[in-house]
Image (cartoon, rainbow, N blue to C red; front, side):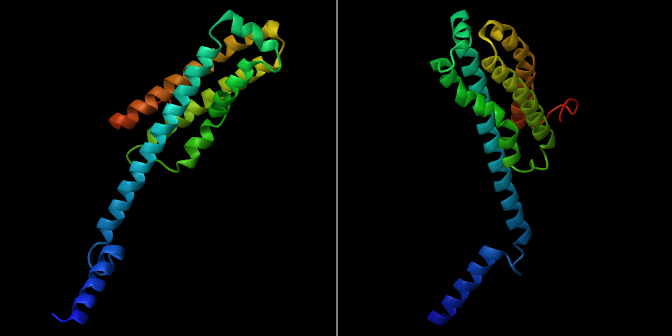
Length: 175
């Protein structure tokens, strides 16, 4: 084979590998693209799940003592500053899931549970924010009201995470 023929063969092979044009590789290439997209989505949802669990854990720890709750009335307290990034994480929950794009074909219920979790987590975060903005003598009761949606969000978060691993999520309850 001459050098010119070798270059032509190399170009033809490259064209087949890159585009699959006329080489029967179109379906395989699109399947590979779909697999990579699904892997990116799964990875993104796992990162989202970790971020939400971390935010919930940190908020819970920061507000776990009576002393901490009593300092909520101080407008520039270290506690308020420490809570802020975790509040932002919960408040941006839906946006983070939406940025992942549509779920892979096999996992639409996972996305539904993730968005249901976000609705509850965002509602709970709004109640935490209201508790921080209100008078300190009412903070404990206001924070108590936040536990219901935060717990519900944590439950849906667990279902979404479990379904991501197993590929199965019960259809009822998914948003």
